[in-house]
Image (tube, rainbow, N blue to C red; front, side, top):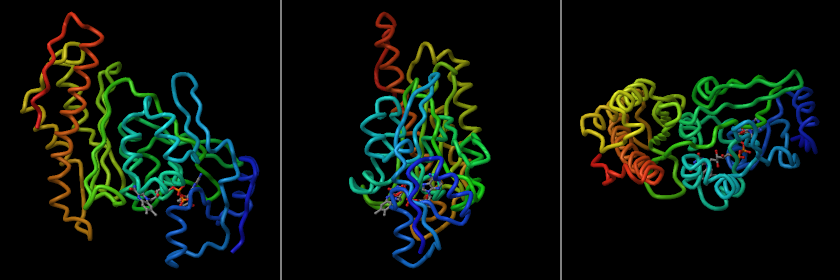
Length: 305
Ligand SMILES: Cc1cc2nc3c(=O)[nH]c(=O)nc-3n(C[C@H](O)[C@H](O)[C@H](O)COP(=O)(O)OP(=O)(O)OC[C@H]3O[C@@H](n4cnc5c(N)ncnc54)[C@H](O)[C@@H]3O)c2cc1C
């Protein structure tokens, strides 16, 4: 097996152009499992860990640019306050050792329907920056995933970064597994409120061949909140709204039966997670609103189940 170890991003792009079949390795927490089990034997590995700029993040024009090689631990510690939904998801990945090595870029490129980073990125409207010697492309999250473990990268392209706006409202992530840690998700759900756009974002994981949003659920809840003036004067949500949101989220899924769950259970669990996360984000939205507008304080925990 050949091992290429570029010291700069430019060298990495040139190496990928010259060896399009080279397999990048970042934290190695996915690829080494495949190699160790003999599921994959790449002729050439392209080591991404010597490229300092890949493991950094920056902020520009109100958006964060997270290098593809930033490990989860640093993402949680350094960006958790600005990206709470992604940080909650990152905290559920593997174990401390996996979070010290594993990266968002590796999670994206593995393109597993169960990747925990994907639903919060979808809910936040993130974009994936990919690059080759030919230039840079920005892909919406929805465009990035093309099938089970398949993505839109050309053979000579690498993921350079993820672009995402810091949270402007409450965010949540929920994951169901057979135990609390070190588990591949049975299914996941991420929810983000974008009060400044009066919009709701969703992301579903392990619920279809690719991670996906629930656009009908997003449109329904965004319109309900706008029509009832709730973005600016939040009150407890009606049970019927919460229930219908859960139904629409479940309807967006097309899960399968597999070793981890039945499709029926996944569909049911998604509606429960959608209702619960909505209760959590709505409580937080009301708390944030009442601390910004103390004279209009009508808080009381929302009664969503
Ligand atoms: C014990 C264990 C527990 C785990 N638990 C979870 C979990 O709870 N949730 C979860 O989502 N995942 C989990 N994983 C999977 C894995 O940790 C994550 O998917 C992680 O984000 C992969 O990142 P990495 O940097 O280690 O990727 P690597 O293994 O280095 O690479 C993964 C894939 O990405 C490609 N790649 C890497 N960087 C780039 C780049 N810049 N451009 C293009 N392609 C690139 C590689 O070629 C490879 O195909 C677990 C893995 C293990 C071993």
